[in-house]
Each structure stands twice: as structure tokens, then as C-alpha cells.
Amino acid sequence: IFFRSCCRRSMMGAVSEADKAFVVKSNMASLFDDMAAAVLKDKPENIPAYLVDWLGKLSEYIKRGEDSQSYNTKHDVDGILQRLREEVLKKQPEQPLPYMASKLGNMMAEEGDGQDGEAEAPPDALSIYNKPRWPRVLNEKALTIVVFGASGDLAWKKTFPALFSLWCEGLLPRHACIVGYARSAMPHDKFIARISAKFKATEQQRSDFLDKCTYVSGQYDEDASFQRLTAAMEGLEGAKPEANRCFYFALPPSVFKTVAQGIHKYCQSSTGWSRMIVEKPFGRDLASAQALATDMGALFREEQIYRIDHYLGKEMVQNVISMRFANKVFSSVWNNENIANVQITFKEPFGTDGRGGYFDQFGIIRDIIQNHLLQVMTLTAMEKPKTLDADAIRDEKVHVLRSIRALDPAHTVLGQYVKTATGEGEAYLDDPTVPKGSTTATFATVVLFVDNDRWSGVPWILKAGKATNERKAEIRIQFKSEILPFKEEAVRDELVLRLQPSEAIYLKLMTKKPGLTPIGKLVQTELDLMYHSRYDNLFLPDAYEGLIYDCLCGNQGNFVRTDELIEAWKIFTPLLKTIEDTKAPPIPYEFGTRGPAESDTLIQKFGYEYGASYTWNPKA
Image (cartoon, rainbow, N blue to C red; front, side):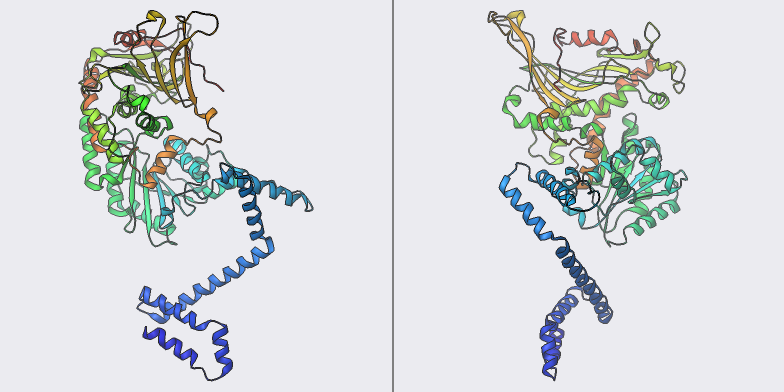
């Protein structure tokens, strides 16, 4: 207060009237008030040096303001915005942002028609609409994303394309920096070429994103390497004194612990959050999963660990909770009084494609069923959570896992693909990377039971296979038969959630056969919701995009908590041990077929009724 008062008196005490007039005209008293307020707010130790810096910044700010006003006058920015506002209020479109983007493109084209030479093409609507959509909270601090294992297949096939898509969709802050880290010595241009091989966008988008990417080579168990990584991050974050950091483990579990120790010792942010996205596999049995959980838990809090299961990022998987608990028509029939069985299926029409050596270490149960399909099952079977908070949802999932009955090996079918009878396709054992005589299953059907009031007696059939007849992942809920008065005319209703491809929900049900037919003649049809035909301009992010974005926003609801992980391994470890101890050869099935016939027999044994006369035909 004394400093501010002195400034004001010294200025207004000027001797000449001209000086006083200059003080008033230049608003100098107000300037000194602002200067004093800044000093009182920041309380610098060296006030003169602070004021020199403050005045310099003020000068730059004023210059920018003058430049902005000049630019505004030259290009009539206010006029353009006023025209745009009038158009929007006149039309009142349902989606104003895409409409405004379209109008801007038209205005740009009109302006180009009146100029000499070739007019610049109007911008694509989405390129304007999708720019600044990241959460504002991410603007407060620097953001660095480190991808460990940056030279590996997962990083360049999934992680970097997902980050690039978030960038193009306006969901990644423009000040974010991305660091690739791996043991391979790799020049920057080779790194850029590798990670961008799968990018699909304009050259400008590619260039802008790749300018944010850098590469650091180092070891996973060396202090000096992590110190070098920290120095690189601090150099990138220099413009902002506070930083958030996300570390993506695109790594094998064998190096999780050493990398986590290096991050904990040297790389965590001291001024913001530090989060770890950890890729599966999370161990190969209960003991190894517990060891990994203990190692990570000793270094990081649970809220810092994001175990990624990409099936939890799929649109239709995330829709299970919404559909179940927001619609009374479903919640009232979601129980053993109405449901005969539930199938959760994963099928793909190709084999291991030269990666059999890696796949052989895990097999189809560890690779797909124990994690992806079991996670989908818990969401489908869980009770209504008290809230939509991450822990409330995961608490209910854990309750389901703890209610699952011990698996019976007799309720399991294992298969391995071979060539067809005519020699077409390929055999799993023909993959040169697969150990000779391997008994690893490439197909499995497992039947589970949930021993609680809601699901007692309902079989849950989890089925996964490689080299089958189609690409498909779905949840198929078959309801019990309606016997009277139609008897055998009425077949079972089914609710199907198609996870991939072509996301959809459809309900198979009975109606009267159209035309001059008796009321007792029925035909099976469907009520369906095809996402891409129902929703215009639909953007469904890839699962990895959605999960990375969730991590940056601090949403853990779509990630696997430690107790979920342990309970899942408790269910499957005894079955896996029995399979590996007996070394029984899996049943051969031909490449490009449904899988072993024994799988269909097992499913029918547990009450599934297959309606071969009906096939769902998705509309274009």
C-alpha cells in the first residue's frame, strides 16, 4: 500500500502542467497501480529485476494487442464473426458447430471467387470443428507422454496411431510433447518414419504432430538412461514450470519392474500427476500376477496405475452399463428367470501370421478369454452400481468375479487349427516360430457359472478362436422359450450386442408371418440399431484412443484394478495348470471353419438352441 501510494504521489506531484497532462493521457498512475499489485501478489526478493521483467512482458502484450487490432481491421474478423452469428441464429441448426464450419467454408470459397488466381480450397468442416476439444484442465500444466518400447510393434501399430488420431480430433493439447523411448539406437528421421507409417491424415496434420515427437535411446535398467530421459522431458517442458507426465508401458512384463523403478526414482513429476498405462499380459498365472501387482504397488499408488484392456475401450462394451441400467425393459428381465444362457464370443479369420512364437507362450485362454472376455462378462453380469464413479463400477465387477464357481475341465473344449482337407489355409504348427509339437490351443470354449441370486443356474459360455470362418466379437443373450400357445413355432428371443465389426445392438424376436397366414404362423425378425446408419457424422474412437484419453482425464473406470486382476487369475490358474500338466493335444479344426464340432456340442449341452434358419443381415 505504501509503495503504491508513493508511486501515485510522485507522478501527480510533477511540476509542470505538461507533465501532469502526460501522466493523465498515458494512464501512468494506473500502470503504477498494476505494477504495485503485481509486486504484492508475487512478492519477489529482487524487486527492480522483477519490474524490468514485468515491464518487458507488458510491452510484448501491448505489441500483440496492437498487432491483433491491425489484423482485425485488415481482415474484418469482427465482420466475419457477425455474419456467422446471424446465419446460425437464422437457421438454428441442431448441431451449430459443424454448421458454422460449413458456412466458413462457403464464405472462404466466395471470397476466393473475387480474387485473381486460383482460390484456396474451403476447409473441411471437421478440420475446424474438431480443433480445441481437450479438457481445459490440461491447459494448466505441461503434458509429456512417454512411450516405452517405442521401437516395438505395439507402439507403431497401436499407441502412436492412437495418439495421432487424438491429435487430429482435437483431443490432445497442442502443447503436449511425446517422447519415444527404447533400447534401439535410432536416428530421429528413422523413428519418425516408423511411427508415422500407419498415419492417415493431411500432410499438415502429420507435420504438426510429428514436430511434437522426439526419441530417446536408453536402457531399461540403467540410472543414467532415466536421468537422460528426465533431462529431455524437462527441456520440452521448459515453457511451463509445472508438468503432468503419462508413461505408456508398451513392453513385455519381464521389464515392467525395472522400468517402474527408473520412473519412480528419476522421472515422476514433482509439480503435477504421473500416470502409468500398463499393457497386458499382467502375468501368466496367479503367482506372477501377484508379484507384478506387489512390485508396482510398492512404487505407485493405485490411482496412478492404468492397466489397459483394450476391450474396455470399445464403444459397445462401454454401452453395456448404459443399456442395462438406463432401460427398465432390460433391467427387469436381466436374471435367471428369463435368461437361458449367455455367450461371449471372439473370432478372427486369420492365424498367428508369423507371431506364433510369442502367442505360444500364452495360448488363447490367456490371450483372450482370461482378460478380454472375462471383463466383458463382469460388465454384463454385475449388479447396479451406486454411482458411475470408477471404483463403484469396479467394486461390482469384483463381486461377480468372487461369485464365479471353480472351473471344471470337463466344461472346456480346446482346439488347434490345421490345413483344410484340400490343403488350403495354414496350420498352426507350420508357423516356423512355433515350437515343434506344441499343444498350445488356438481355440477354446469355457463354460462358467455365477453362484449368486441373479445368475444361479445360468451358463456363461466364453468362446475364442483364431483361423475361424469370420471376424466377430459379440455378447449373445438367449432368453428362455415361450411355450404356449405357439409351441414349437416360437423359437427363443436373443439380444445381441455386436462389439466388432459394425457396432450394433439387435433383438431377435418372433412376429406373425406377413400376408394371408394364420396367426399361429410365426417368423423370426429383428429390431436393430446399427450405429453407423443411425447416427450421422459418427466418430467412434479406436479403443486405444479412448483409453489413452481416459487416462489423461483421470478416468479409471475403464481400466483393471489390482483386485480385479487377482480375482480373474484365481479363476483361471487352476484350469491352466491342469491343461499344462496333462499336455493333452487340442482337437484339430480346419482353417476357416467354426472351430471344433465338440465346441458346438458342449454349448448345446448347456442349453443353447441354435436357430440355423435365421441369419442377421446388417443394413448398409
